[in-house]
Length: 231
Image (cartoon, rainbow, N blue to C red):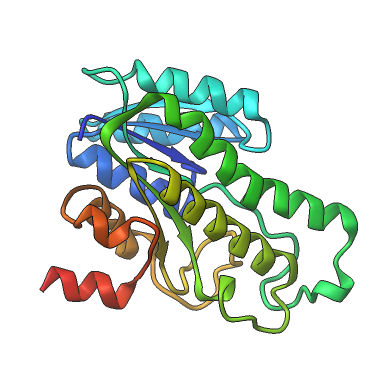
């Protein structure tokens, strides 16, 4: 693997994945809305001997994403993109305390634009640059498939993201899958009880390198399947 793109790479799961991939010798191109935070992660990766390129980009803006992918395609030793992590996302409010019936139209629209349309834009703009054996993964969770009270627009947006991934999987030669990470402690989830981002980052490396492409293409791969495959 030569080049990987990680959206939402300035913190949480995205940062953990970017750091791990870079430690494995991959040139990581990461983006987030906060350019200073992106550069901070890039500097940390480079200080550890890795290679990284930071781009301030908002996945709600397809022109930002187009520029991100064009930059990534030229960043590594070889042209093209080998791995895409469509990780950027938002949650308006406190997790578990945002019933759909109380969601404002503006927060609903922004959640869908970031977490659903943002995944669409990320994969769509990556397509012209994907190598033949490239892989794309979309982080998600059970709330996308098993409705729980209080997760409102976020749950709807993750279901949308998974549907986008399935459709691309049906249409692209490259593998596109969903990784169900289970609960993870991040700022996005207000540090809810769960795993540390560094503990789930190896799941992404596995999906990019060791996993059978057919096993992830169009599928939802959870922690149980990952651990079973690693035995």
